[in-house]
Image (cartoon, rainbow, N blue to C red; front, side, top):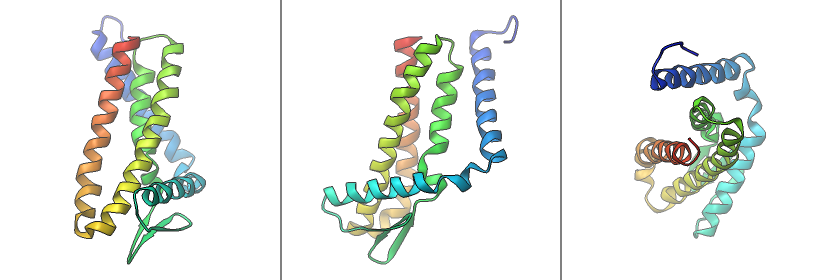
Length: 161
């Protein structure tokens, strides 16, 4: 891609290019307006998961209702941006297309599952200790998600790179 550039710089440019392309497509096609079926599915799975650990959340469309709090599963809660980050890494990494497809086939569903666990956990936290919701939503789970993307991407690269 960049003649004479270091492998790290070439990877970085490809990675940035994929992220830029994903962002442009997301914006150009207003994908956030078409994610409601995904949002409903994630909300349903999250309520199911919350019930499995003793919770009592209720589902109403894309809303998870816990006592007096309503958690709206909007497009940002789908994990789409975390998936774009992971996919950008995998697609930019210099390896075979078969290895890239394998990385996406394993990593994307794994991140989707983690996202459902995240929302189910947050719904349960609201029941047990409502004051901790904001901290866990904004800091703890954001950090966990980023670490999992990093560890997942690096583990995949070490295995197939």
